[in-house]
Image (cartoon, rainbow, N blue to C red; front, side, top):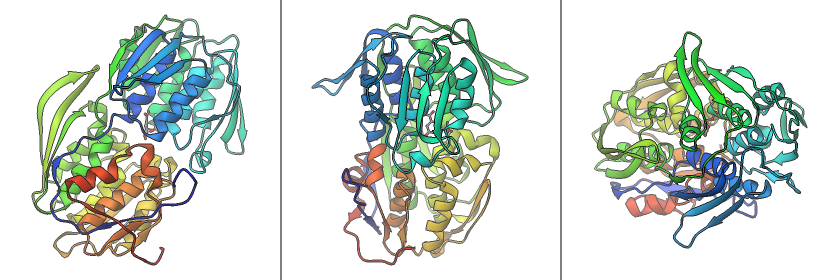
Amino acid sequence: MSAHGTPTPLTAHPSGPLRGTAEVPGDKSISHRALILGALSVGETRITGLLEGQDVLDTAAAMRAFGAEVTRGADGAWQVFGVGVGGFAEPDRVIDCGNSGTGVRLIMGAMATSPITATFTGDASLCRRPMGRVTEPLALFGAHAHGRHGGRLPMTVVGAAMPVPVRYAVPVPSAQVKSAVLLAGLNAPGETVVIETEATRDHTERMLAGFGARLRVEEGSEGRVITLTGQPELAPQSVAVPRDPSSAAFPVCAALMVPGSELRVPGVSRNPTRDGLYVTLAEMGADLAFENPREEGGEPVADLVARFSGALRGVEVPPARAASMIDEFPILAALAATAEGTTVMRGVKELRVKESDRIAAMAAGLAACGVPVSETEDSLTVEGRGAQGVAGGATVATHLDHRIAMSFLCLGLAARAPVTVDDAGPIATSFPDFGPLLTRLGARLGETTPALPI
Ligand code: S3P
């Protein structure tokens, strides 16, 4: 959707090889956390490589509303002058987190143990998503939340005036829930303990340690046990945000679908809690190389080279890998449509509560493109078209979901007929340069030709 709320359709036409360097934007998860922890530290945090997508800009605006000073320098670096743990002011207006589940859930956590009240809202997609998974643990600290039926936004959170530390086992594999509890634990006295049975992305833990919080991570029989000592004084940092492996996934998978392609993605995060797609692509027979491994901003990074190497093989993705590639299933499903044989993705029911119901959205769009698919509550099966090729020639409904839009645009580059997405606007939430970047690499994206809606 454009800034004026008008859908902006976009069409991907069958394209020649994609070649060159794909400088994908900064990591979205790390960008949100850098702004929030910068706002909770005392003094000036400097952030380079921040993702300037709408989701992150909404978090920057929210941090200003809670009293931090957030500015962008002429050199593109961002400064956050934080107010310290427990120093958030009460916002005098509604906090609009736009399309961002990460933004709203992390910010709710960060304010829930201060004696202030804040009202949160978002776009139509975010207002459909469940917030109870965050407000339930926040209630254990003493916070109260009042939202719409089913724990939906708009929602008002009344922070705890006398917070108590909690011990909480996260019932769903969710880095957002884990992070909301840890951020709330920052302003509770004593030790807050979060237990996760399945490891999820660990950027909050890494960054909290970087900002000087006392934090222990132990692998126990219960799972991964994270113990945070509350009420630290966080010291401002210089944060270099690595490039987002979830954004890299789109040009990389497009290159693996379009014959003759070869791309380099410099400085992409190789955090092991985010690498499930790259493990899966290797199993499918993809030609991928990670060069110059190094550390940047407390995260492992490398330069990724992806080369087209013929049709890939369909694979079974085990449930244990789901958390480490949760945002990559839409583009994997698109790639699987071009592979030889069947790809089965299991243990993926969390996809039903993302920016859209991604199992349903991918299944409907792939079927419209002539790809046989089936779904259960927590799995998606795609019958690859292999040498026959994907028919395409459809208009796909994206349901305000940036990753659904980008996945079908990538598929359209490799299909026999163009693929149109009904609204490319949400791509700006995470990857504003997606269209221009792919075009520079050789993709044919552009005018929509009339097609029947699915
Ligand atoms: C994120 C966690 C994941 C992911 C989202 C970003 C984060 O969500 O899908 O895009 O930054 O913590 P869940 O925690 O709901 O799995």
